[in-house]
Length: 237
Image (cartoon, rainbow, N blue to C red; front, side, top):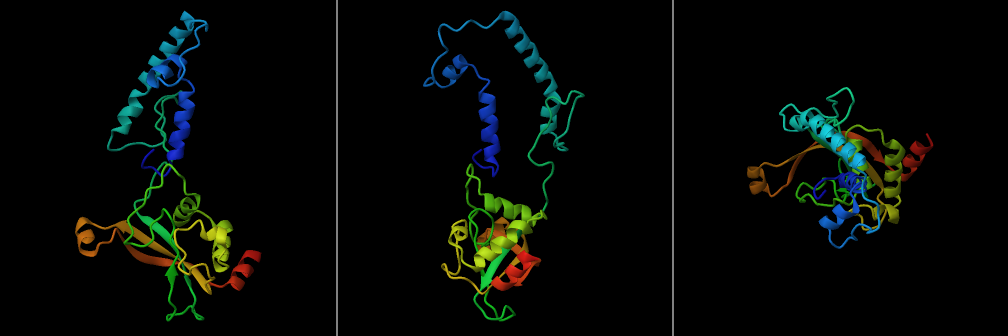
């Protein structure tokens, strides 16, 4: 929960699980919570026996998933019995070996050609400037940064990404508040573009010699330079 970008999933799981904890056990864990109601009827013996039997069965079923968790060939989102109980579950079935990032840039130059000076828009949580140390935001969920990460993975996003670029071209205040920095200080750029970069952490030797946290290389143009007029034509198309 302290380090994950999806800490809200952990929080929801804990909340649901804690709903099954009895008052007496909750009071023992956190004395500030009220103790069990004195006049509540005691737990029936048959119910306690059923709970113990079911708990013992789930512990037995959890053996194979727990062993899988420690395996070098760990299976994700796999079932280990015909009842599909006690499975290995993860938010993602697999992860990529390389990290790609979509970087948004703007320029005030009349011509977006070779002589243009492009400046980057910085996001709060995602990599951008290679010299910037990665920040910690969990358990807060940065929705826009999260969408930008999926965009770089190949998720379709032009239904929201092109409107985002259009808002940047008009220097929309509400949109700029979602970002870490606006390189134009609240004034609209003439052009914006998006490029795809491949990122990796620097080695210790690279970090000592350059001071950079990331090493990146340009891969491809994601969205070619566009103006407010061309953004309007694309959205209508």
